[in-house]
Image (cartoon, rainbow, N blue to C red; front, side, top):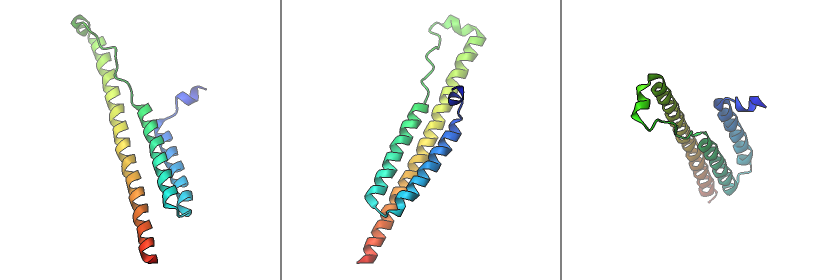
Length: 122
């Protein structure tokens, strides 16, 4: 069961992206605007939930007393932990922006295609 904790987040993101694309292509064949938009928005909600779980909590073990800062090893440890938390939060934000871009492109392209088909039928 330790392998579950050692999964690489990159592989999880790639797996989610592949599942989303396959599901989108299956739903897209039905040519139903409402169903496609629901699928995209539900997938977006799941992606946001997964990203929110990957954001670390700020390291709460920072020393309260200045005398603890005089120990260079302890200060370095606290700075490294806070730096790791900042890097992970920045990566989660970048992923959020990328996923939001993909979802907006999928929604807008589907709506444009739907209205083009509707206008050509008239």
